[in-house]
Image (cartoon, rainbow, N blue to C red; front, top):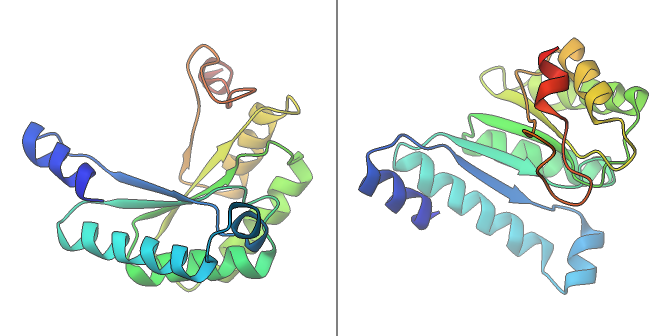
Length: 167
C-alpha cells in the first residue's frame, strides 16, 4: 500500500490502488498462508490507502473457483472497509456465460444490495476462449467496468480483447 501512495505523491498522478487477493482456503493451504491473516492484512492496506485519500479497488482473484462463503466474506469485508470498487476476477478463465451471470447476480445480491456505493468490475481471463462473451454478459448484468487487454497482452491466455469489446 505504501508503494502505491509514494508513486502517487511523487508523480502527482491520481492513482487507484488495485489490491489483488486470492481469498480461498485452498490457495492458502497450497501456499502455506494463514488465510485470516491475509484477509486482515488486506483490510489494513485498504484502510491505510483510504485514509490517505486514494481510491481502492479490491480484486478477489480466482473468484470463479473460490467457495461462495469465502468469496462473499472477503468482498463484504472489503466493502465495509470502504473500497470504491470490487472487481470479480475469473483469473482461472473457467467461467461460461451462464456461470458469469449466476456469479454476478449472487455478488450483487449479497454485497451490492447492502453496499450501494461500491461499483463492480469484471476481470476475465481467456483460457476457454470465452472472455469476450463473458464480459458482454457481465455488462448485461450491470457491472460498472470491464477489464480488457490491448492486442492480447496478459497472463497465460490473456484477458478479454479490448478491440472485440469495442465492437
